[in-house]
Image 1 (cartoon, rainbow, N blue to C red):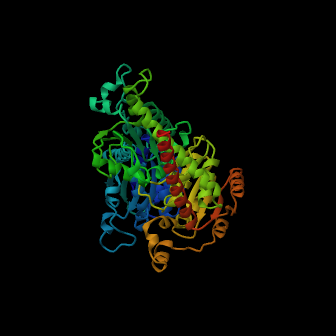
Image 2: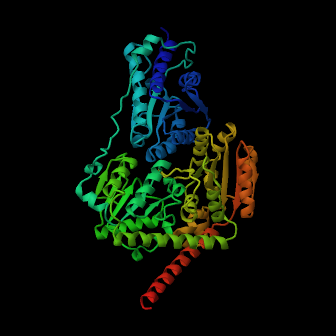
Length: 598
């Protein structure tokens, strides 16, 4: 049998393993060495292939596809620096638990370390940022090697999709000639010898009679005390609804940033502290809980992290529930670790004090009332200050969150965008999903991630993004244009790295701050929109902005809505909000003091 047939059967066996594990999407960056895998994947009827010529963009596109579907996506490229360009997205996928199957192609061993073109060491290229990495054997078509090829693919796909989800990698050394035999197919006998069925462990079934028996006595006691619930990372809408139910059942306040979906499901929960960044600005003025219950990562809210840190000095126990068992605890303070799913834990925790139990204690009632009042004050202050604000980034961010419908999607970029939504937007009734890249929290690859997300969702996706972040991944716009994706980009253009205006670097002299942190781009984004055939508008009022959003909703393709502002306007608003909140708290305390003596 000739080389072409041997290579084809070997690679078809690998693809068979991917298919058997449920893989049905691939993102391909074309190149020479990857030719046989690319052609065979492209010809496979059960695999939808997306083509992206920019490897960095392609990797983030695959990230968006996998993030939306929660199933593994294949990512393929040629040899050399092409594979290195996948790295940023692989890091994000690993830290945010997104399943990717990264396939890199390589020169054969005899061409390594001898100066061959487009050749570098690719074995274990992604180091600790993948769950599993294989250096594949050179193609052979013996029964044993065909089974090996199938098995490696199957195991890679399973590993990527087992908790915690994450990227995996296989590197293929391939000899020339590289064109496969496109007429060749695996025989039915060959395919039958490769059939494997994965049978997962049965899901934990909680006993209807006494589910709380699964908890130790000390945790049962803590769940009846005064507590705070803190949620981070990306949750589903069902998980968020369950967490709100737990919050109300226990009479505990609950905190979580936009990616937790708590904002989209918390309109009817008065204990949801949507404005936590405001409420927790002075942790010394807040009451001390008897326990903290955490789910997943810490939220984006820095003041909440400082609050949790302050509790360690008082030996307040903290419980971390994380079914991935990666235990995200950067403060090193959690006392109890529970490898449970959110839904399982909520079911058990609610049984600690069933709905048929007596009315909660006066102390717990007062605990809940305190936090409800603080949230009411914070929300009123934000609404009042926004009403006084000229149209800018802050107004646009809040208006966008209020505009999106239940069957649409919001993606918030990092840096200022997610913080504006987290700090200022109220709880919403629409119930739409919110996504972001909060694994490594970088500004790269955001546009490409949104393109992949929109391709999988086929719903209108709204992206809230800053000018630096958009500039960093303009190549991603090509994928939006190529596949005619329904994406509305709301660009917050303050012509600078606006996040640094909120940070201590702003105290630097202009000669240091401007070149190193302000980093003005002076780009015409209208021309960028023209380049990628996107509709463009630059509204200057809130009503014009909402009209632009409504118009974009009627289009089948992409729109760019540019909001021009300055980095100083959101900072000034935020300072006014914090000052007004503290003044309101002071007035409330004085009123209580007077009532006590009246």
